[in-house]
Image (cartoon, rainbow, N blue to C red; front, side, top):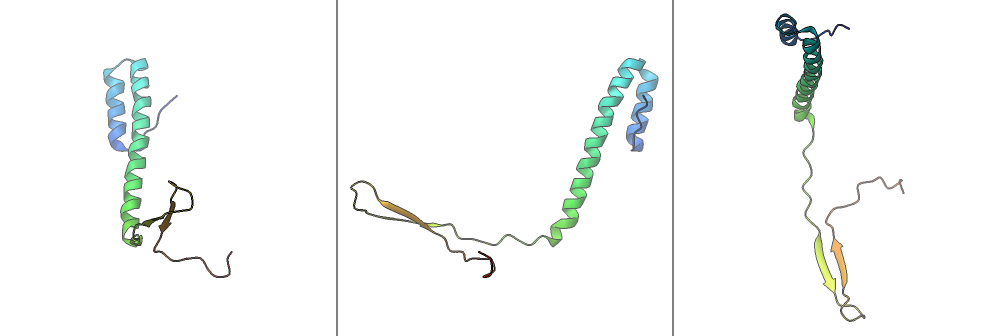
Amino acid sequence: MIIKFRLNEFRDIAKWLDKKLSKPLAFFLKGWLYGLETRYIDAKTSAAIEEGIAPHIPNDPLIDPPSYHSEPSEVEGLDAIGYTYGFTRTRDKNQD
């Protein structure tokens, strides 16, 4: 089985491994190197995509944290606890 590398840097390292090491060890290391090359390509493309999308992503809206309130209830030692949020409904009125 021949392992084909996509980047010249990794191809050069694979050629060096073939020249300097025994075939089984070189094959094992080239398999590991192929996995490393795949992860390297994935990381570079993810970084490029994130960098390209970043100017177009809208900023997160600033939402105030919920306010906490507690009222005494009819049961002793058990207060009625509630949270109030300051945001409004964002769905269309036609949706239920």
